[in-house]
Image (cartoon, rainbow, N blue to C red; front, side):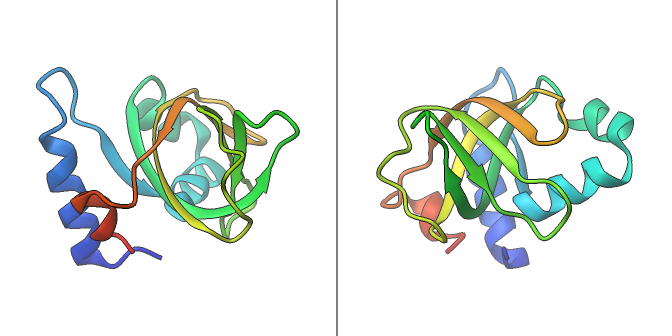
Length: 125
């Protein structure tokens, strides 16, 4: 789980990502809980937006370009994008993705891992 200071630091980094769009920083647990509570409201907030999501790996799919991120809520988050085959179950990851607005599983696309050796990654672990 992200500590409040870590979320603040990560979101401050997100703001510097570029002038076009400020990414929304959200934990996998919070994203899943919001979709479980009110899909329409979650779509309004996240669909089509750039998201920075942090959570533990639940499963690497047969297609290595898909990884499921575990949550405490009812839904996993399926991240689709780069090759995730080097990840291990339980490993904490941070991904930058686009919200797709799908449910069961919650799907995000165009995902790339936020590297561990960057200042923003260190602030959330």
